[in-house]
Length: 250
Image 1 (tube, rainbow, N blue to C red):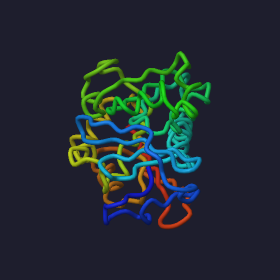
Image 2: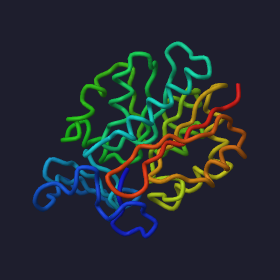
Image 3: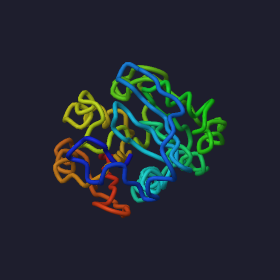
């Protein structure tokens, strides 16, 4: 996710992306009203953009940090001793960069993607976002689980309470900047405990953020995670994107 048009806590200028604004005026491709408000898919020059309730969430301009989310989780698993065919849950389908990165890595085993917006899933399966994800969606390792991430972590939806070796979460612009108010519970002690329960011993939690959060790092340590650290990806303007990494003790 990148910039925000309204939120004063945004670390980026409004609608700023690594590739600029695109050419000409943006064109709305689809607009849906869902249980969490309005979601819009736009094309702006060569870029595809997703906007929720007037908040710019992400576009197809770069994707380095979204791909890093998955690569860094695998590196952390390797640093902890590695394991054959590790399983991964990706929280948030978005424009598909994280899913494409996971599917391009043959070492991953089962790849589950939890996405609460049916419109986003449709834009990948039948719409223009298939430009990024069509190959990944055809991968037999990949399963899309429609629904709320917190409910999935609690054992609801497809897969029940099956454990994962890595959780790669990108459902907000960061722990300190949530897309909807109810998402905040994901970063509380109870939410982090739910993440830990769904991880195998030695499993890795990776959380995307548009800015570093010292408070979230401390929350991860207080929740019992070890090897808590961050990896950064510089952006064109503003503070770097960040991936928070933490490991469930073996």
